[in-house]
Image 1 (cartoon, rainbow, N blue to C red):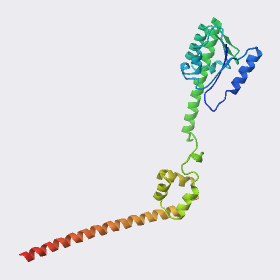
Image 2: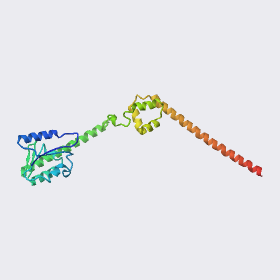
Image 3: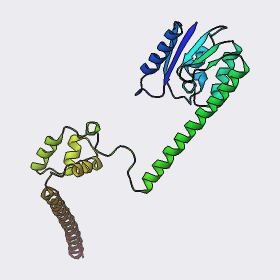
Image 4: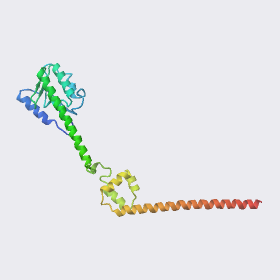
Length: 248
């Protein structure tokens, strides 16, 4: 049986190009693909947890596995060598389209598989190292890594509620009232204000002044209540003294 194996690392990639290359390779050699193995998984994942690992339980002598390149089988030297070793033990042939390798149970195939798998692992490590170095340099230069803030407004809680918020502001509603009505935190609302400079500053300033007035009114009310309690206590004490005098 002839198997065609295609793999991509993320769901944002497609296996169509790999399928096309394998199909042309098989057609040129008059080989028919009996079964396709298509999976989306990282090449560093354990082969036993992949569809490729399940293939080992059903392959037999004379079966053929066609892949675009050996790096599709995995990015780890020991994993790839282990897989190829099991294929060779079962007398299965592995064909690589781009490199033109035909790996069977012979010494030349084992040497080629080892050399190419080693180079694939070295290449992956170099790419990872260059990526880390570039990110570190960007960070030292002061560049912000990751997605810029506000690039995807559709995921923000207040997206689409701009007019309602402006209406609350025109009515003179407080930030606390707006946050309660929209069921968001004050931090989320502050981010919204920073991203929408069209909101008049006078509203923000007026709200601060009103908050100060409310605080002053609260303080006056508290002081008045304290004064009233003190007055009542003194009056009660005075009445008590008068009653004692009368009794005497």
